[in-house]
Length: 169
Image (tube, rainbow, N blue to C red; front, top):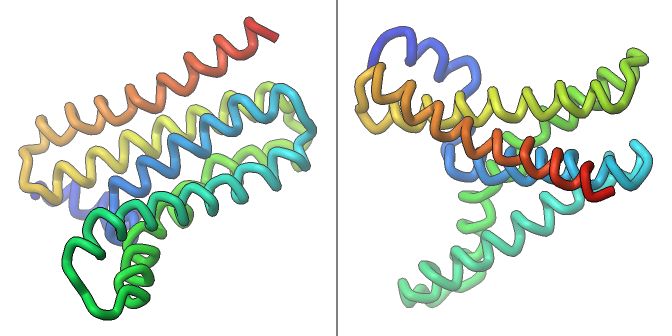
């Protein structure tokens, strides 16, 4: 892994699961893009973490069903706890866009502008998660940037979702 990528990895590294960080960040951004359009900021502040928690539990349980039960472990609760811990990056690495939204709104930035900046933050994070995952897998710097850009493209799809939802409103 190139030295610059190691430095970046230590600064913004998801705990251990870049896939969970991408999932959670995309869900957080999609919720901000859609929930905010039809509700108050307070509703968004409650809905985003609540939805992330429910998604984390459901995703972890599905992971457990696919791998925990298949492993034939006599202690299924231990397997379920392991899945929950393994997938917690869905929540822990995904809340930064919401925090950005809250901070900007708290400083008086108009909500629509704060939402767009929050979505841009999500796209930047997704670029970072892709870059880090590629670097950890031993890809070259150039390939890592390409994978990061692909990850950011997924985040950009959330912006397309926002535009579509807004045009339908």
